[in-house]
Each structure stands twice: as structure tokens, then as C-alpha cells.
Length: 261
Image (cartoon, rainbow, N blue to C red; front, top):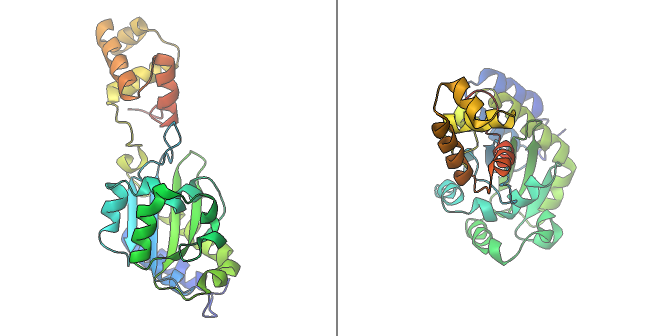
């Protein structure tokens, strides 16, 4: 459990988490714990649904950075870089922590996924000298997904090799951090924003999934049948579905049928 500096960072990290309140102070504690392994920076992101129905990455609803270039959040969340980030592609498809390196990608987990479409991300990370790190994928039972990543700016040539004995400890820190902050997530953070349905559209779809006809839904909600059909048709269009059956399947994928609207 010892870091690269010969000290066990876990007791101090758990104590700092116990004293911290809110995501930002806890992220500071996580960064301090990762520093014991030689990391300079940390990234944490969370999304209630990681992939679209056709397998593309969904931009996270929460992205937090420490000691990272100021424009990275904008590029990843609004510039489309998250969808072409090789590290996120690997993380979404595996459950164990992994070392990655843009200095030596052929020797890291990135070797099998990197291609021409990833060039903007690769170029940005090399230019900002964030070329090596460890990412901890956190797949949750409800389908939620988070990643916890430690990054080394200007890593030494063998820094990635020195990380491998510490993967279990780094993974434990990532999971402890996530468990500490996840309970404070609000409803918008926990709701997939890739497809936005109104509360009434979600309700009509959920009742349809339970087997009710439009007439029965109208009676339950005190609305006209035409109004219910309008809500269902709008939901079908927003989901890019061909019919109500496909709309229900896609709404379920995006967890839009969960809970009360």
C-alpha cells in the first residue's frame, strides 16, 4: 500500500476525507494522496449513463480537475474531446485500473484503441505534457460510471513502469473518493442529459412501458387522449426512435424511466 516515496497515504487520506465537506475539499485530499505516488494532477468525472444506444461516449454530467490546464474542461465537455479520448474509451470497456502513456502508447492500454480520430486529444495532452497516468474505472450497479485519474506532468522515462505495483492502492483511493462524494450528487447530476425529455413525456413513456394504452394513461392523468399521444410522439422523436417500443427501449437505456418524474 506504500507510495513511491515509501509512505502509506491511505490513513492520511481517509482522515482528510473524514474532515472534508463537499466535493472540492475531498478532491484536494485525493490529490494529496496521489502525490505520494508521484502524480501532479487529478481528474474525476461521473455520468449516469456512459454510452449512447449506438455505443458512443456520453459527455459526463460532472467533471472536476486539479492542476490541469484551464481550457481542458471546455474542450472535453463542449469541444467534443471527451468522445475521442482514448483513455475514456478504454475505461468504459474495462473494470480494472490501468496505466496509460502517450509517450509510449504501444506499451500501454491505449495501443489497441488509438487511431487517427483521436489525434486532437493526443496532440493536446502531449503539448500540455500530461502524457502518463493511471485511470480507475468505476462501474456502478445502477449503470452509473465514473473515472478517477492521476496524471504526471513531465513524467520520467520509466514513470509508467513504476506505477504498476501501486495499481491496487490507487484504485482503492479512487473508489473511496467516489463513495465519499457520490451521496451528495443532486438530481440533475444523476440524470442523463444526452436526451432531454419533459417530466410528462417520461411519465407517459413509463406508463406505456407498464402496458397502459394511451386511453388508459389519459384517464389516469386527467388529460385528453390526443395530449397523451402528443407527449409520446414528441418523446419518440427526441429519442430518435421509430415507434413506441423502440422509444421505451431507448428511454430505459438512458434511465429515463427510473423513479418519479
